[in-house]
Image (cartoon, rainbow, N blue to C red; front, side, top):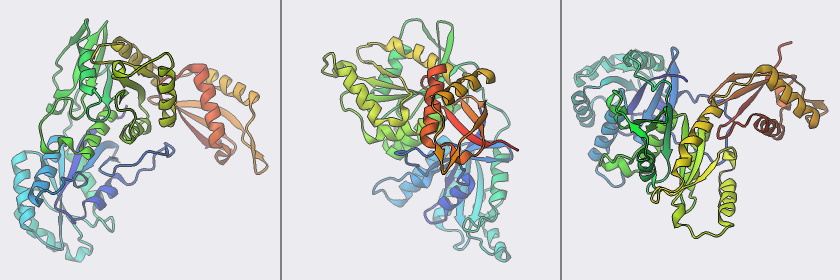
Length: 438
């Protein structure tokens, strides 16, 4: 698993070009995951890589308060940045010079004791880069001249960001299974976590960590160690922005990223909503182990067909999560809560399963014999051999005559064959085609 070196948050008043710089930093990274229909991208959160360090970026401007005065808006952005990030990237507009709002933000940031990088944007002509000197008056770090529009100076910002992260790597819960519980507000996430932790034979320990980790809960059960990675709202911090949906999505995404297994909680009383699909989509895209937990099962009117009917509905609504097991529980009545941890173990094991190359190739050869690849424009796909190149999620590269010939439907057939042979319960499988070098 890639260690994330740190988190950087972008702040600044409106129209200074924060989003342009955000997009430049995350560089629209092309991901190896094919686009999943029904998953929208929230452009407030991204990952970036520079000089072999990987870090997360938050654009606080994307989280907005409704009908609040402008200063409140700025306060919230700065507070989120201070709460969530190691380093703050403060963007100002070089064409306009220092404004009162810039000074106000600078004072808030100075009090925060966080590392601050000052980016003077819209310096499109570097002959005028003298204009950045007045920004020394903000009393922050040396201003860096950039042009988000032209992509100039972004490398300097990235250097500064990467250098600002502390060298110490916080204990990343080695050898423990990390999981998080996500879902809409009021689906019973916290009662589910509490029911899990209140089971007999669970020993909760406090691991020393940074302040941000203080809300994670490590525990032990039957000799195995787990950590519940907290998401927004499980331990309410009572901030104005806690209930803003974009903020809870941001928290969920950062929890998903830090977890091995994600429990997607659906509320049995109110059924499946679009927001459920939205958040589950992030877990799928991140390639994490996923378990669908249908909570408040006690409140559902049931006969012997109910479970089948609901299962069908979940499968229809979450088509891309066909591999995720479904558990029916009631946190309130503590029903079937004991099924959750063993399932987390199974799914985590599946997501880190490594298959021997010869066994993998045998299964794929058999699959091709049973159902040969279809021809496409007179050409037929040939798979020479396959190799597993990664785990979490298991990623398999097929060396073929022409990657274009691996059709989506045939890829799905191969995936199903692999699942039949090896289980892979609860985990995405990534199958990539590469041309075999002649």
